[in-house]
Length: 113
Length: 116
Image 1: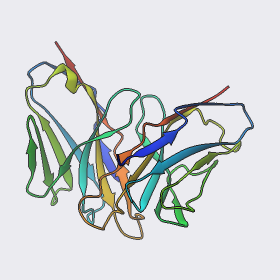
Image 2: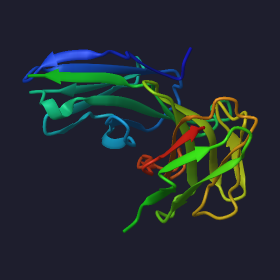
Image 3: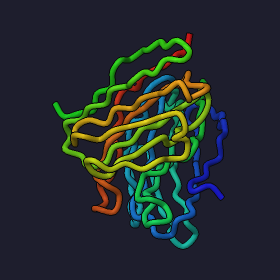
Image 4: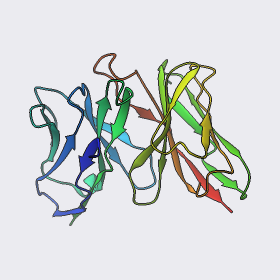
């Protein structure tokens, strides 16, 4: 089982739609969780951290479900500029995992007019 | 300004040559990482380092080597043993995982390596 798994998509949605991505992780000891955005041929950039209580930043909402070991990202009122690849990142702790950041393979979002 | 810098942005290598990619950060981060990304694919971990003079292999370390002689620097050498080195290489740094919640990674702009 991969340490971090995401649906690769692509998710093709019209402008104004609401879209949600999930990401599952295998290491129950993981402490920190993040969503990154990567534009074509660019480096990933932090979109938001994911806290146990959930957090919201404008049109973006992130949730963490420790019991089921998944995090989610909800994007409301999608814009054309939201088109990108969204990467889920989890810290992997312990000798078995090596104390490192683990990236999912990413979910492609395409917002169309 | 604090940040992480990779150089060069584009690099061309002849088959059989070793090349070294530079990564420097002034964020005072202990942890540094090298990832490889192929077109349409996710990031794959090559090597990572949690502290100076120590580093660990990632998932695809074969054909690569690193050093961590200074906190600020984590150069990656792509050796002739790497059979398919053409890819986008990304360097990142962070506070080491497990040392708090603000352990997000900051990335350099990447190096595109092409074998000619």
